[in-house]
Length: 74
Image (cartoon, rainbow, N blue to C red; front, top):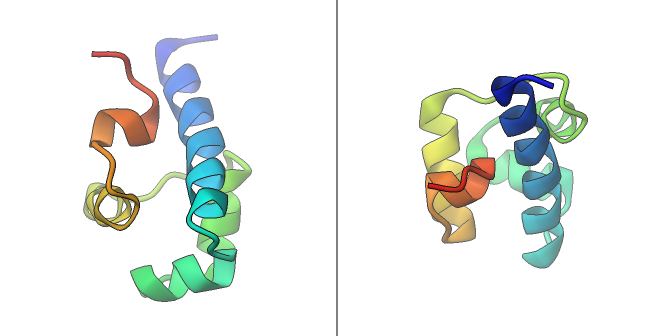
C-alpha cells in the first residue's frame, strides 16, 4: 500500500471515529459542513476525499490537528 493510500485509509477510519466520539450522525456532520450527507458517507468509505478547506473545518469541529485528522505521524 502506498503512503497516499495509507493516509486516505487512516482518514476514513479517523473521520468515522471522531464523528461517533462527538455523537454526530453523518447527516449532522454534513449540515455543520454545508455538505451533502453522501459526501460524509463517501469519506468514511474511503471512496472520496474532502477539499483542504473542508479538512480544516473538520479539524476545527473535532478540535484536532490536521495531522491527527488524516493520521499522519509527524
